Length: 575
Ligand code: PEP
Ligand code: MG
Image 1 (tube, rainbow, N blue to C red):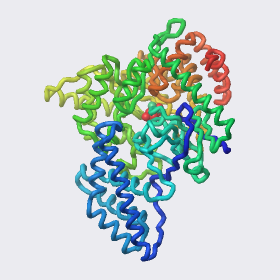
Image 2 (tube, rainbow, N blue to C red; image 1 turned 120 degrees about the vertical axis):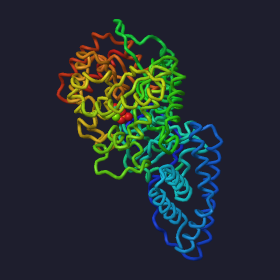
Image 3 (tube, protein in one colour; image 1 turned 180 degrees about the vertical axis):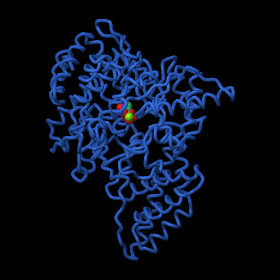
Image 4 (cartoon, rainbow, N blue to C red; image 1 turned 135 degrees about the horizontal axis):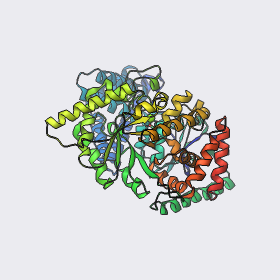
């Protein structure tokens, strides 16, 4: 039995056989073969094509995520059937002579480059399909590869550094747990794993070579431990823990529809964060009063290209229909850094988190931004929509976005298209510059939503996706607490509603602290809604305020965390 410590990113306990998946990005090593081996390699290539074809067939006809994903599977099948592609790979095997995986990688990479240089935007974006298809074939050809997205039996998936879109396409019924070598606590991949309710431990370092495919793993998303080949007693203990966690969640869920109010009558809204409209149902079943953050970037993955106005609108409508009058905060595209930078073909940047990310990318691609704004405005005529701008760092940027929005409104008026003329426009406060100038932004924006995932990384200079510095990533750092206090105070002073949608809000001790700091609206991953409500219903406003005041006096995050852990177990003993 071996125990590894990683970063707990999604709660729950998973126990099952390991499916070890090499990084989809890993380029195969060129393996020289003799002329006598050519037939074997051709045969391996044909078998891989057949296997991939069957998988895509199942995906295209199965009940996977959405119609759009089934559509993508169909278009991948068409690529896979292309005779030119087959001929080129076969020629590469014969002429090398080279291994099947090397031939696939070299032909696909040449095609990918060709597609990337096409003039036509629609065809250029098809290179993403080629990347996916290459990975699918390589997974068939490389040793130790499994079919990550749809294994035929329940597994704990072990991978290196999956992208958010890879995580979202795994089969939730078969993938019981997620274990990765890389990735930080609030990376978007982690957020997606959490929103899918799959227990996950990230950032374990180089463990893949230490895990035998099929060997038993315990993935403890609560403590961040990965246990390889557990002994009988440990296995029994974790089976009990798994049941306990499930029981706890069932109990919380039963209380989820109770009013969200502290015992001394302080009303607090708890909303959900979503990536897809279908998550609205889960959020509402878990007691969410609305959606406080709709991350729209996944519209891109669903379609494999930038959505047009009608596709945007169809998605927003589909979310609104499920909302039945509850508020829906739609955030404009937040592309870049760990969100689809490669898929979008963004040129590599030395510091992507400090580069052309988020609202900066929207400004750089005004046609995409305007299309999205038009659709959000149109949706606002059909429900309680609010618009949220990510990564705003100054009043100048806010005004620039606002001016574009006004122009789009003017266009719609000209076209006699309905929209809510008073559509509330809010900003994410997730950059220290915005937090420090919250008083200035409060004079212009309609509401604030604090994004501690980015606020923590930018304030502490700690990459949220990098497991090597994850121990420094602490939202309880006194610098963050001071910024939070300042944002909340400025919001109150200027009567601007302040919500919190960063992952910090999901952690019990921090929920307590944030309540005490004066947060009255939380937006969290749907599965965390009952837990947040539970904290709200257990603590008086006065007690929370006292705890927050005391937490602010500690000089280190370690002391803040120790104090909050103690207070949490005192106030919520059964947890
Ligand atoms: C945040 O930064 O806290 C946030 C909610 O946005 P995202 O995680 O999508 O960057
Ligand atoms: Mg953010």
